[in-house]
Length: 427
Image (cartoon, rainbow, N blue to C red; front, side):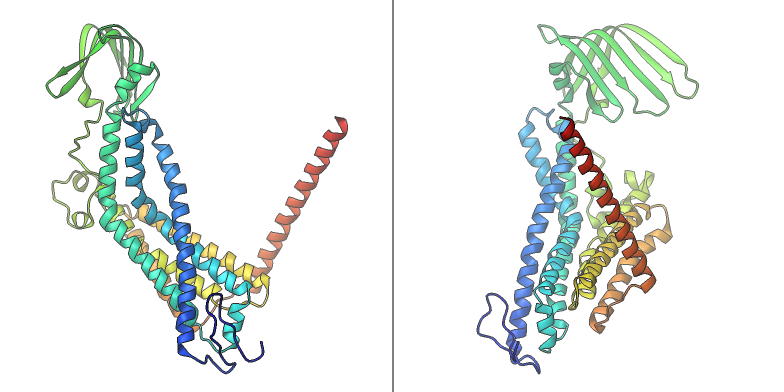
């Protein structure tokens, strides 16, 4: 490295002197090069993480989706409506992957060392990181407050419509089918003419009592817009949970209004997660959740108004601990572990504090204050070029713990090899 600094890949024809960067344009172009790499990695990390989390969320609702008469349409609609919700959660971690991976690569390829030795200041690193972090924070805020409420409402409507078909599916399959939480139905067989037999319906939605219906025969009857399940030759058993007394009523004919068992798709009450942010800031006095469960509104507001802080916080943490050149791989590994630990601690506290904000004023204040304080602290450390270091005793404990874990793995692997060889010899 005799007097010149080679430009990064794709940026030929630019040089700098040891005393400082020769051209200001080089710095700006190098910043764009870093920003482009980070943005691409962040984008693909966001796509991959979104698809992964989306798959798990759809699988949790698979029972309802496959019970719909239009299962494929319901599946595609639910997948689309879940995307904004997933993006808000995974975007900070996608940014963390993109930024940390690029900074790690720059350090491993000695590019950070070359930049520092050529006189480039820390701004050449933290400017691209701050720009990308601010962009992801803006994306998170926009999606969480402008798009997610409407997608959650559409998701609820789709789930309600799919759930309304569950009884007809239970008739066709002859299996136990969950209609709602603590509400199950089983229909053994069908007869010509639309009747079915062997009906079992268990309703435990009310904590005070459990109701079970048995009937030999039954049929679906449509009266206007209402559907009824007309049971014949059966009995209804009701058990009070307080005194465990059971009352049994036998009947020749009994009509159940299915509107009390099945969602209709036309909902009059919307959850806080399905309402817009201005609505939650000033809900009507007769709103169901405002009257009965105001803590749910508080939790939702705290979550929406704090989630956008974490991409910016994660980017700043990466700047502080990974934005400077490291002389050896041990320091590099220590920085990565520190970043991961801090990120998990901050985001874990964010999830917990948002959940508890509806029950505790102190936790509500902490939910806003901790990420904001973290942003101010790490912004100051970034601008000042300071990097906190672990105390020597803590480093010693960490290294000792890693050594013990590696020894346990080695012993387990050795035991596995001996067992495998013993089995092979016996064979």
